[in-house]
Image (cartoon, rainbow, N blue to C red; front, side, top):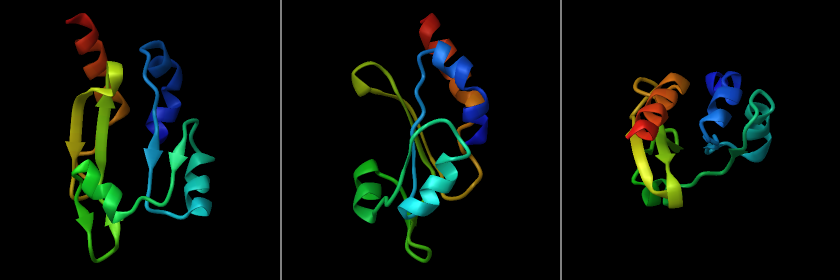
Length: 104
């Protein structure tokens, strides 16, 4: 997530806003939010994971990475679901996708 914070000016220029969320309680989420320059939600539940179509890991009671690029009117332009740390969308990925879509 730090990559998104580091490239916030470039993302803003492209019209991209970043928001994150976690199963963590508010104090832990605030620790992450203090390291980045975008909102970090907290307390994601299994019901929220189900609503997103995300994979909920029963053993650790966590939502696995679920990432969405929303366009106009909150239409999903791209999404990524993972079952671990591999395959997460990076700041580079978002910049490439937004740049590509804006040229269409």
